[in-house]
Length: 346
Picture 1 (tube, rainbow, N blue to C red):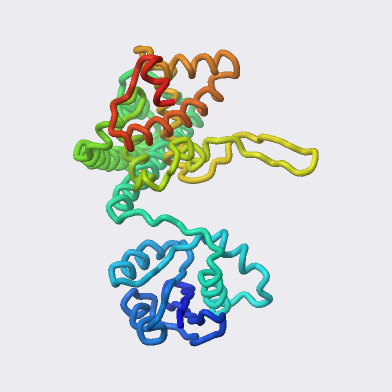
Picture 2 (cartoon, rainbow, N blue to C red):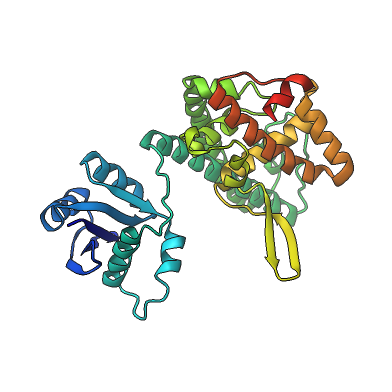
């Protein structure tokens, strides 16, 4: 008889539930949240397992890859979809959640999440760390400027002048206590700047070593960060049957609300990876405002900007960039600048 297993994973313990093809409970229990312990319990309590379901979460990538390597039929389920399915439970417990997940994978009414490779997760961790450090650097910079403004010292914005030199010049004749405070903040700023520079070198090396990233970086406006973020977020281009689905995957399509006579579009959905969406938006802005060479994509975007404004044009071009990047990746072709060539891509 086929068996189905639900896993409710926490940091220390994992609750397991095994049910048969008739939906009846076979076994329930818990074990340590290690792949080895989980796999041992599944093999002993559910030798005829067909599907194993666990919700997407912080530990799901580790467990999914480890259980897959052990030859177990594990599925990663969309946590929002699973929680909506199990919301009718009177008592919310880990034990009941494991039972609910087992019933979901038995019924087949689930939404599977594509788990990215560990290599993609490693690069994405670096991209996320860099974005976090850049945000911290901006906060420290603003804090220094705010402290100095309190004492009437306003830093100039001379083009090409290092921030550290501007602060040094401003603090030369300031109060000793203020000088110590600002220089402490400036030390943090310099450290953040150096760490960001080191991460940039690592990311540049990753992009140069990837043929796909080099191909995508030939698109005007697309740089190292955009190419790496896109490639690691998509991971497997074959999971999209149509390239135009990539725009919706990154939340760059209109959000619709329709009920009865009400039918509204309220901006973009902002689903999916926010970092990739940000980089695509910035790449679109660079293409429209900084890239001097004309292309069919730029002409199309500026036509939208003239009609609907620059912000909407950037969103539209960002969505188009995602579509073009996916199509280039799948077909292995170069970016097409002319209108005749770009028509085949669009």
